[in-house]
Image (tube, rainbow, N blue to C red; front, side):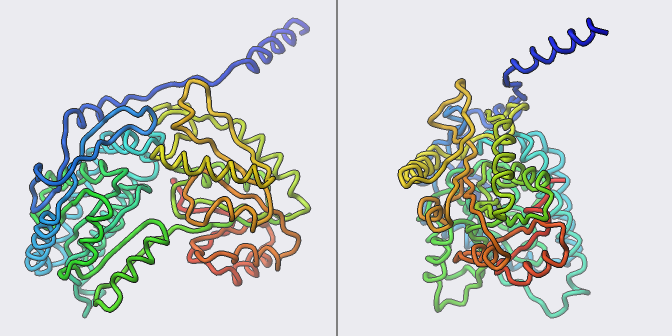
Length: 466
């Protein structure tokens, strides 16, 4: 027995000295598809190569060049909108059942290309392959299937509703494939046509979706893609033949779109960035709450609108909760996109890293406590930014971590009473979402009734990946 105990002790000591090491997943399918490709505007079912200036796309984790994208010109914008307007005349005349056939076809072709979609999105965004495999791709597939069903019911359940015309989508770099599906599927199901300007940082999933749309047999002009920057977005927004604009991104840009379209008949749909508080009361299961932070605050490196950015913890459990959270964070593995052992990758651009690093430097200068996970030595310190906690009062934290900051940073603030917690959670111009953590149902309902947010979760955060 003594020898067995000694053996177990030796094994345990060896285990404690073991360090994380990368285990790389294959990126061969995505790299082969991207190799040598130059993507231009996708208009009327064809690719346009000779257009505006070029944008070189790099893998955020390595800095290696992976593709070239040709920016759209003013002429491309006009041709794309004209193409969508022409296609709209025949697309809206199709029965809901006929439109559903195309949406079902798109969904099935997405399923056939799951591995390629996962790898291209991971290469472009720098996220772990588990993120698009478990969330983005399944979400996109489900959306097309879901709205294919609605297309079949549109004439019986939505009588009197008519399609609007050309719908423009302006996308951010956040979850590009899922965002594409959220815009395209309902618009096409209702009988509209779509012109999309993908994010200038993450355009490759949109380019791949255009290829899949051809394979799925989608009619020419029903879906057009216009890569480019803010100039292309502005041209689309102001175009006279555009009926509806959808936008996801920073609130400041959303405000500019509202001002630019004031007095026009265009309809707007927006998903904007902002603060997402998580309220943890002393009646909560703090193990579950701390697990949720790890899964949801840093999903996609915190670069989603609903990611937790503000952690409000009741004072009586604040110290214990903070220590527990730090211990769990220290076990988080940072790695490249195709590292199967990593929990988190890095932001989709080096500029994001620079901006957030400057904000954290200001936090330290102001005397705020900052806790960060160490970036492994084998990774570039310039490309990776670790999960970060900023401890302090709400005012001081918000001054250094702005409400439009989309990054793996969470501010941590204590509160004493329920009234104070509600006031802190509502102290934001942009109430995107919030979550309440307590096992006291009466308290949860009381708090929920007073939170001024678009989405509210009870003992959960965001959209689950299961």
